[in-house]
Every structure is written in C-alpha cells, then in structure tokens.
Length: 115
Length: 112
Image 1 (cartoon, rainbow over the protein chains, first blue to last red):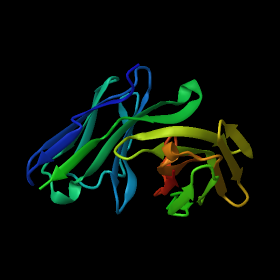
Image 2: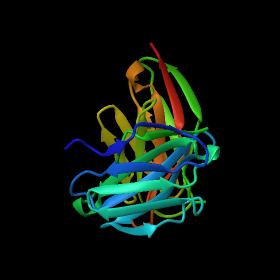
Image 3: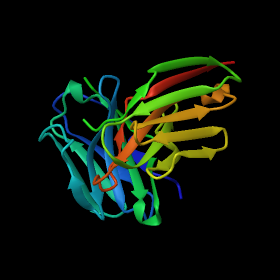
Image 4: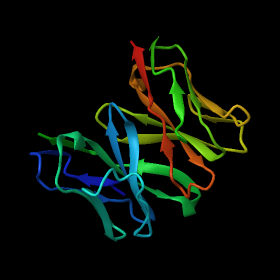
C-alpha cells in the first residue's frame, strides 16, 4: 500500500478564497482523522470519521471549516472563506482498530499558506 | 484538557548517548503511544504500550508506563544523528473511541 495520500502538498491562496484539501486513507482502514499543526497550538484534532460517518467534529474551529467522507477511500477538508490564521500544516491519518493495532498512519501533510 | 505533556521541550545530546523523554497525562488511558516527526514530514508511529503493561522494548527504544503517576518515558539508547526529530506522546484515553490526544512534542537534536 502507498500509505495515506494527501493532496496538494503545498497550497498558497489569498484570504477569502476557498481551499479544498484531499485525503486517501490506507485501504481497509475504517477510521480517518484530520489534524492541524501549528507552532503555537501543536497538533490539534479537527474531526474524525468511522466508516465514513463523522464521529467527533468538536475540534473544527468554526463554520468556515467542513469535512466530508463520501466513500471509504476519499475525504476532503474545505475552508471557505480562508483567513491568514488558517495557515498551518494539515494532516490526514487513518487507523484500523479492528485489526487490534491502534496506531495511526499519517500522510505527508498539506502546508497551507493564506496571504 | 486531556492532553499529554512532554518534557523536556527540547533536548540536545551527543551521538552515542541515551535520550530520555517524559510524558504526563491527566485521565485513565487505554494505551499510550509515541510518535516521531522528522522535519517537514508526517508523524510516524514508534511504539504502543497498553495500560496493563509497564515496560516495552522495540530495537533501541524502551518505553515505560506508570499509571499510578500517569506518566510514561521513552528511552532511545545509543542515539544516532538520524534520531534527530520531534517526538510526541499520544494518549488513547478511556472512552475516546480510538481518538488520540497528542502532546506538543519534544525536539531532540543528536550532534554527530
């Protein structure tokens, strides 16, 4: 397996624009997590899904953020409209607890810069 | 907050020395995990220790867990320059339903 795949790897956009980040989890993993990492706040869990259903979105900062998982192999995190304070590295991770391994596998991240 | 807290925040050692990193947490856990992050990369799982375990080894890594003190330590023996990275502890606390809570990380620098 190629691991967790994220795209794009880098995104630079202007304030007010819509940003869409994409993630393909490892095949067979039934949990998918979206994190945001900044120097100030560290690694924050935004939302996670189980079997394509959102379980906990309490970390989503505000209504400008939304996430979907239309099928087991694809998820998106959308920011509309984007603001400079959204600049961060966004990670997607997947896991397979039913396989009795609770470790999370992280993608390479998307570095978002909002100017 | 359920967040694990690591200390020290930064650690600089000479190649060949041992590195010890600590993590404290606040509530009962199912397991505790350690991850490594190289600059510009995603996190990579290193080792998991369950709440009923006290010590675990994997290669040059040794992790201990003291549930009475709500703390864990990660020891890297005979460090190498390639061990230079940030290290995070993550807690899977009881009732979290597979959700992990990460600390802010420890920056380890291993000087050649």
